Length: 489
Image 1 (spheres, rainbow, N blue to C red):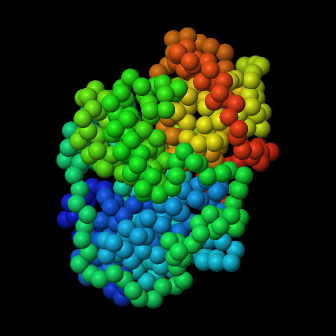
Image 2 (cartoon, rainbow, N blue to C red):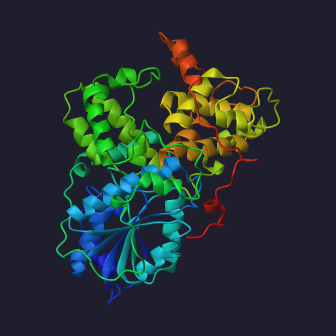
Image 3 (tube, rainbow, N blue to C red):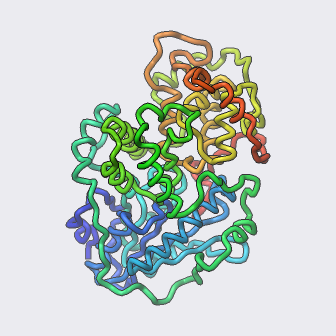
């Protein structure tokens, strides 16, 4: 039986790509739904696609989520956030009538090739269509080895990127196609399974995360223990819902005017970590925004950030072979930066100073300390932070690698199409008419939007002197093993 026939009639079929075109396995015990990043049970198109397919095949859905010790930049911060989300995922899946199994990789419980082994007993596999970092690479590897159909489903965007079409080069062109689709894709209804939850054999003994002491578990893993859990962004669905309520009550009423002010705690939503790991989805956020009593200009501005920019960056990533790599930057920007690559760089900073937030630039340190302590940085500071790295490193390629490394290791919303897109925008953007040393025609950025505000200097001084964890410093910026092909699933 051709599985693509079973999915084409689904109401959200534009979210689906067929990665491996094989017949449905007639002896399959379940439809495997493998989640890496969309860690929510409701309004999750990956799960819904699996349920739709399972109902068509009269098979149960088995939702699987696992976490390994050896993914790049694995740390207490990332592991604890992911595991907190995974606990709630499992509970909510079971409330939905779906079996959900989880595995935490560590020395005493290695399960080599577990996704492949689970797929061997499946009639079909449904996984996430994530265009960056580990999720993209691992999905491709699973599809290459699978003997059953493999579907990739986009759950990160309100509007499926496939509806935009290929080759859209600018954000204005993207918006012309994206904005008319938003209303039609703003509503959802979770698919209901027609089959009882899977309770059969498994090729491993799952972890019962809700019964474990997650802090103790994380402490025993072979990961980076020097990077602590963020108290600003607690893990789990309840914390995400609290921040969504805060957005509606405290942030949204003044969003259009306050969002660029890094000194105001109520200016930013703080939702990006929960979006990155799929604890919340854009449809749920926009439903809350649209029902709020805030003024229209504030709602429009948040929609522009969440949909107009975030989904533009996601679309860009789908059009690139490796959104994490320097060659994604606009060719004119790479050329002008290359023309000035030999310019003197008297302000160079060491990787150790940058990582610790101990450079000679107070404003930059204030942003870096947010990364170190909170696992998040205000967007206004991020732009200044990124621009300065270009002048502080030996080459533009080294600047890109450094910015991505600091972002990916420290930030809960790193390793994401949006953060890579923002970094790329700081390396390019609109060409400046003025030619500058080091930057060429790439625009620079000052810190006046923060420093010149009332109380701005005092805020920066306090932010730059926050106690921060002392981290290990690599001899050089690491190369992502998933981009070099040196890692294994």
